Length: 422
Image (cartoon, rainbow, N blue to C red; front, side, top):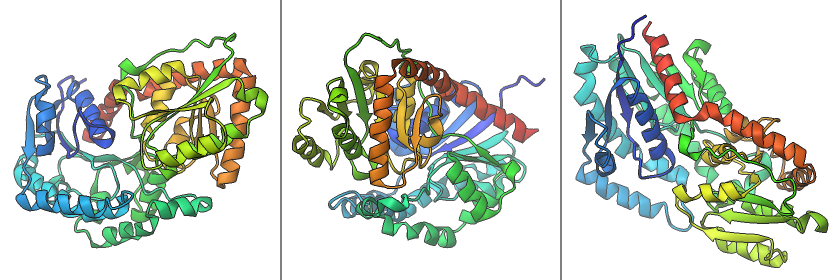
């Protein structure tokens, strides 16, 4: 068996240990893979300050940003932030900034790839299935891995009001981009392996590009750090059950539905619970008014924005995680909750519905807002009245989430490299 470390070129435009969401995911993939392979990382100059704080990381190439991109980014950031953030429009208008990065990566590394200096080329971010990679043009003799890509999940039919609030009518730009962006179709049709972050995205890619099954693989986007794991012991005699929501307070995340579900609980159950909402966002004032109007001030509390590193304290104190987000791609908070032994009640639309199995919680079909609220109420009641089930699900959560630990995911990625190189 060849035990020599493989040489990998990782293209991770968003790779930053000090940020959240995709930049942090990009960093976690890089950090794990770099312990198993000889890695050259190519990333955006914006990540340099954070990465240089970590002297263990070597062989990093930073792609500079032109003055035009700096000015252009400020313009579109301002334009798309009037009122609520218009993410579909922001992503579409950001393409020229990404293309500048994409072009420079190609110019700097094409000869090295043609010269077979790397065993594999892997583009990890952007994770949205919107952008191409020029590097695929010179990867005829070097495996090119793409992903995990995730996204494209539509809003459920029963939530069109929320879809309008989130500017879903701009999503037609996805199809426009697929048809107009140079190299987009070629990237997907040529890649040796495409990792899809959810079953929905996998099926979408397969339908759009007619890609053979052997070149597509389900590979969930998110992971969890080992330091986050907190095995839970259920106190059967505890008179109060703590419910928890963690996330941005925006319409599609569904904190308002949990509040309504709590309001619908029987008085006996209400006397046995506390519900904590961790996070901030445009809906915070509306949610606080909702709590006041429903007379739930003694049950529901808001923490405001909390550092990601400090959220573990709230998971440790909780018993049940309620997160009925109706359109979630990654859903890292669900994995965080599971790592702390919390049974999860989620909406089944996107990746989070696949994280949560019948043994670890409840994944509710988002047929309508009314159905989701009604079922939330029912499932919360079930777990509060059946402490044995709560304890069993808690143990299964902790067991299930082990496979999402970042080092385990990195090992799986390297296994994919090995299979592609053979």
